[in-house]
Image (cartoon, rainbow, N blue to C red; front, side, top):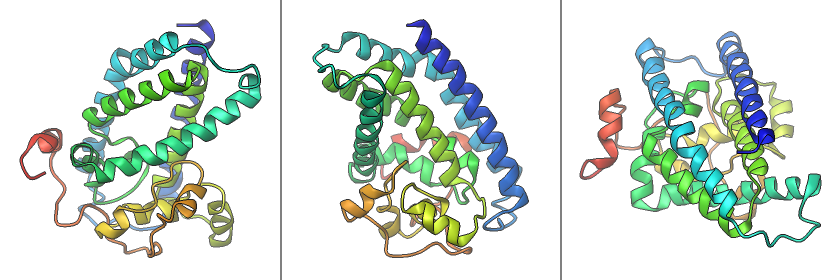
Length: 259
């Protein structure tokens, strides 16, 4: 792996660690919604942290190598204008467009939903929800990303920068941070905010299958996948007709019949 990419990965860890800590503290100081007793349980935080820890372990062993191999094996067909800063910006917009469709597929394709539903089973949203994913989904996402890297010859630098922005955005729009309404309305015209993404986690399936954007908010408007409802402080979070499970139940959930 190139030294520059290794340095980017180190910066990625530092930036995300600081951003997570800042939002984690702020959302408890100025929350948008007050969790009920069960939702505020330390067991929920431990459950989410355990899923995150497992993914942190497999990332350098599986996820990063998959992307690195794909980047090194990709045919170098890109024209000169698709390089440098302009090329990086184009890559970021293109990858955000593609992750919109990948997220949408996770709600439509039954096999993908089996894994992705583990993320949605959380009955409350805060920064820990942003890193709560089944390891199977993480690996499937890495394989899908590798196909894009091979097809479009995406440099590993662009991939690392994009993944950093994705996690920065995810931590923000999953957070329980209360923002000034006028500021959030203006911000939501450009990027996904908590008011947008909380509706995506609404326990009503019609809303769960909407608001798929990750960074830029324009794709939902462009492809008519915006939810009809708006966020309310008492909005029920989770998966319709299913309940939250303990850690081992979540790990086993994608492999159970009828999940």
